[in-house]
Length: 167
Image (cartoon, rainbow, N blue to C red):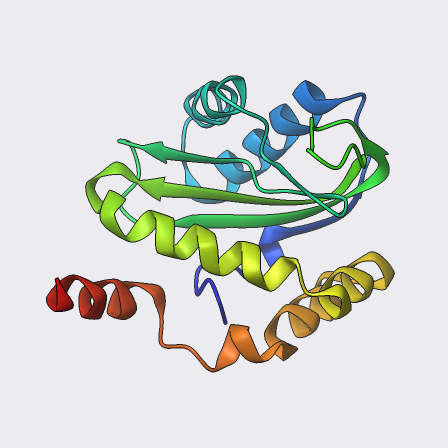
């Protein structure tokens, strides 16, 4: 799995929102409930990043993310929105697939490789199509695990350590 911390409970399908702020608020609250993290700290981190530049990456996908002092392990979630919303994507497409990634600030060196890996995974047309058609979180999880990039690479911390040793 591309992000070992993602499980079926971290997947929400057909979330009803009124826009970007509503979506990020509901996602932050959901993450906070599962991980015993302050939802306002999560929302503040996501919104600060979003105000620095939109996290819509095109093809109806957004990857809001934040580095947080208050967590010691990465936290991930996938949300499929009930209706697409504007996320400021460069291609102008509204977003319906939202992958949220929270990363411990203490492990910031491993963050960009993890984010790049996630972006490569979700840009695969078969993944996007499958996630849009998934009928359950189990199905969405199986789709994410089915892509070769999700299963053929070592876990993120090990790769980051290997890359660091080459420098």
